[in-house]
Amino acid sequence: MTTLLHKIKMAALICGISSFAFAVFADDAGNASAGSKVNKIEIKDFMFNPMKITVKSGEKITWINRDEEPHTVVSVGKKFQRSSGLDTDQEYSIIAGAPGTYEYFCSVHPKMTGTIVVEK
Ligand SMILES: [Cu+2]
Image (cartoon, rainbow, N blue to C red; front, top):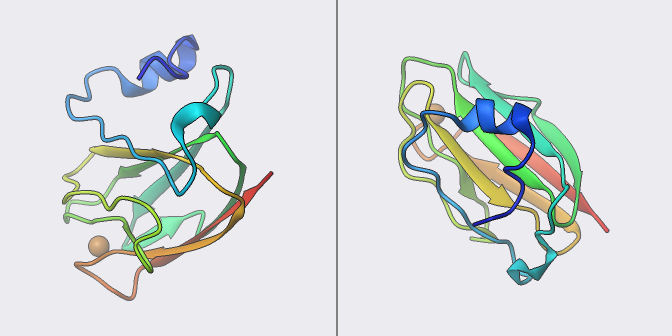
């Protein structure tokens, strides 16, 4: 868990977040090297924004719920670990693993969908 948190900007970002979920796609955590950037997805008005994000393997992806409603992040085909129910302003993060296209949705509102494209 000593990954990317050295960046001051990021430290500020996650400051105060108590539960900080962490998961890896298919690959192993060795790819999660320091210095990777953060890819942020806001959940607002029952949408993932951006709906499609392209990242590099080993980078961190963080969702934050800006709605008053709880939302989840669930991988189609269970390609990565699902989040628990995210309350307002709660975050969920994963580290991008093997290159590929990963679809996900909110289990509370299945019409909410998003796509992660992981590049090498
Ligand atoms: Cu939802």
